[in-house]
Length: 274
Length: 326
Image 1 (cartoon, chains in turn blue, purple):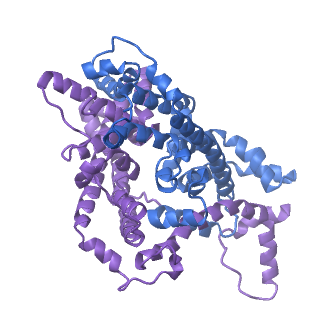
Image 2 (image 1 turned 90 degrees about the vertical axis):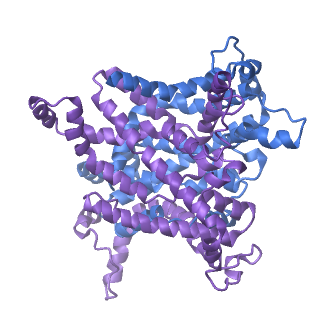
Image 3 (image 1 turned 45 degrees about the vertical axis):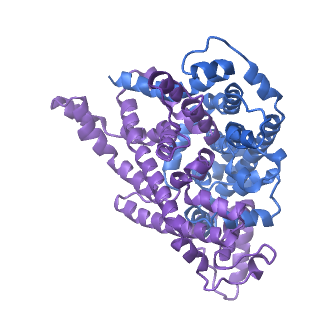
């Protein structure tokens, strides 16, 4: 009984994805004739060919990859630098800084004032608008801080006696010990950047700087807007759209099994209050 | 320097500024110097918070001003009376639409994000086949990592009126189709349903963790008393995770005005504004598309203030259950 129900959960989680994958390999004419709910009789790679040849998707892929790599690196460096001093209870002013950080999770000024700051700092219409306004997540910093606090003090004492400074302690002792947590948090940050959408909608007008998710969203909704305005516009076929969906999701799906074992640990740490 | 640092713990938390006595400032300066590396490490993070989190708080002023881009925040004249933009929002016809949509979508998601994950967590917990359970867990949290645009693509594959799987089936067997994504009767259900699909497994993790923490001896005792599986769930598992359920519910109540910008913005279209438009998407359109900065900022501020109050109240309530946020 339990196994049957759990089987249903698996089917419900996987089936929609399989439908997308199946549609991406089905010729458009066949989807039109059978509504896409029976298994395809023909197999085509046309959709994938179109995706790989589409310059806007290529551009989006480059933008998103840049944002993900550079953004995640920046996130991790600044988060570690921020969390480590806060994990040292002897630091003067620690409580005040914790409060200042925590307050930002409770109250935010809103979309418009944030937009004005992004504009004032000159980030509008640059890739940095998708990177710098999310430099750290206070939640992730707290996960890191909690982990750092659990490192036995004796390790630090020993290294200090050997004459290590704070920076060396951080790089030689703390960071190597924290690799699993850093991978977890790095995954959270990387997923956030790969899926970046809202920042681009708010801060990017330039078509060449649109990240993959925005390009894909436009592709998915193109019928209703463009086709009406321009009768000659080629409406993207379902095969093409679903191929784009599969390729955009693929990096996350491929990354997932490798880091999956770490993130449960991370979620548990997050549930322990800082 | 080394000595200074090892001695320091005696003085934890006495970080209030030293009174201006003779000799003290020098000592304070030396203490500060001994922490220079640690304090320096904080600089990038603090700078970020100051500019991108606290900076906008100054910009909140435009909610009380008649903001013009040319004059800037400081130069723009105050609105008269200063609450003009708030009043305009409260008395406008879209106020009730936005509040209804935001709160309804949020409450539906709250229910869908609580009960089904608990049921799934129970299934995980009861499953005796370890490999099967692991498979189910792995598969069910995966959608959490997919973007809303991908989920929208999945939704189109299933629910599109012309080429979707469900509508294809309906057309061939019953001769009609449903515009799930364009109909006001269906739009909220689509939002809630896709949210459920995306996060059910993820939501179950924390309940499962709480279930694993329940003392095994309770179950043995119940079995000796002749309790079956369902009675064990009812009398031991569910009461055992009650504090976690309540805590999470209370915390989610604090975010009731956050119905999810990304999802709604990606899913909606002009036909479903009456049931799908939420505060955040409206603020985006009013502010950044129609350049009505002050009004949009006022609505955003209204949302943030209510959010803050709700979170503080929620934390108070959660504290009664001996598990507060801060």
